[in-house]
Image (cartoon, rainbow over the protein chains, first blue to last red):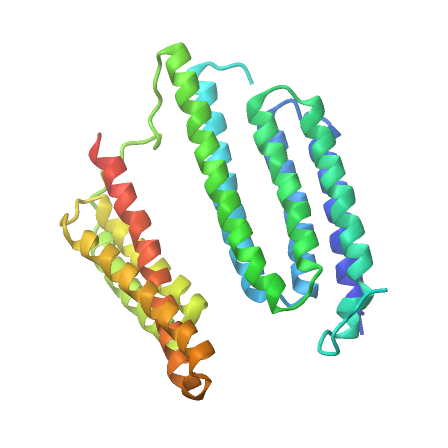
Length: 86
Length: 223
């Protein structure tokens, strides 16, 4: 019933809005907020992969995104503990 | 004029132009953000956006080729972010003279579930992965091995076991290459080539995930 294109264009919208939110969104001077905002384009890209039936790419992308988020969050926290200006 | 083979489905052809267009827009947004930002860590976070744009453009091809190109892109992005994070932190450590541990809390648990559950879960995941074979099976079996190693790391692990596994991973990769060569040079033996490639990549991916556990052990031993 729902056409394939709906998921594709929903993904495109999420990617564009999410990347705008990451670049000029409110409060992005805080690196924590900016890192969490990158999850929005990640969800949009997942929808695009889903439209194209790229199963293994989707699987790897989800795993890689979660690992990247973990690394970035830990780096931010460690840098803040060291007292670097962010 | 664009040449499109018949095997590409019309759905993919219809959304090719919008996908490339969206990819270019997102790349421009991300590069604009990088150009106005001065802090290194913020720039590193923004490279994620450019990476997403790259993946959209690659995915727009829409065939198996896209899938095989997305995987190395992701791995390279992961390695790059890991390396740059380490560089940023070591630079800051040298500047301030302070050092902060990788793991915030000391990892000294002594729980019974850490001795019984990992073996069971790891065995089930490895068997299921062997049944699947190929890349997915390797990822699942590797997850099992990784879980086992991580939970043993907390209590200490026999040391030279995992170095042997690193060697086996290299040999399995050779099997994978031989399988591919057989597919191209002797197409009549395609079943042998397919099986060699499938199980070679299964063993390799499974043991690569196990190797992450070895790296973790080296990291924890320092404390």
